[in-house]
Length: 474
Image 1 (cartoon, rainbow, N blue to C red):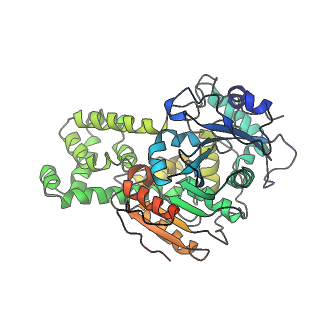
Image 2: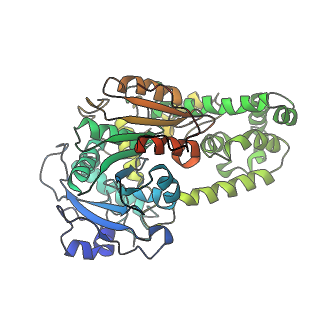
Image 3: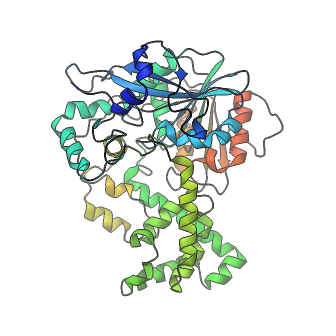
């Protein structure tokens, strides 16, 4: 029998003992006093069918779904379900962002589920990903081998963690949890894909949707996971062009920024010590990752110039700043993303070139200035993948009023692909687009104007706090 998540059983024993299954609702969280960000939170554990989409044959134990709610600080207007990205991230990625989220959704209860396979919900490797295991909920040491061995020995069980099953989970939770007022769904990155699949299943009781950093359509071969380095490179070159257009930045570079960078990369073949201050000694990958850090992306040209001069002080300062900012998303037992789930869903759902080899990825990236790790991770995946089902690339037939917020410098979910996706979605309902100029991924976190646009959208009125104009509304 498949074991339920040990952390859920241990940390939330009181919920299980009182019957946290169908309709039991929320109770004070056992860990609410363990961190200021969790103060006042309520928790629930719901049971869901292990394989609602019938991906694999045979009976199996139900999965446990953990949900945390932060009640409104005033009379509640309704609820907002905050759907994390990844895949592999849990609801914990929002815990330290409550001020920003409350600014965007004033007066709403904030509900944060852990997808199956993440956080305190049933894990793919319940022993190795338990909070009390050597690596906590992240895999460490020998846990990698034992986890992946189990998943390969039980392919039917592994395939139960499909995206469609996660969408059925969300549909079940939204329809089952008691509430008053309106219901909104907010998804970020992969969370937008999961929200749209949930709506395609015909989820009831949803009054509106906010999609942050909207992923491309699943059959868009210009923006899938295998093309992610090409996406990062295009955005990175825009950052370098911004430097060229700035008198101060271009003067310091002394030549077009892309030229300086290419010259640096060529030198490194003979002088590898040039990149000693670069984490992983791979500036293409580092700078690709920095594109979505609001304060770090504009620093990239200056980092390139100082690397050319053999300096590392600015690099150290930027890395320290990024690490501090990333603390906004972590610090809880649930925080580490599930690597097995990342691999399973990414490779099964979002890689349109599954036959590529590592050598082919390397050849494609040889001429790029910015890269992503995802195309390489989608090669030779160590898990039994699942076949795409009938919901792959299927759009909802009906869409409630929807707002998309998206940065035009997003190196993960490209803006032009989001625009194409919006065009297709408009056949199902009204969709508005707010473009955050100069911003990258996860706009709600990075852009206050975006939060004000969301606020106006969910309140149904302009309360004077908007600072931008919606585009492309219908």
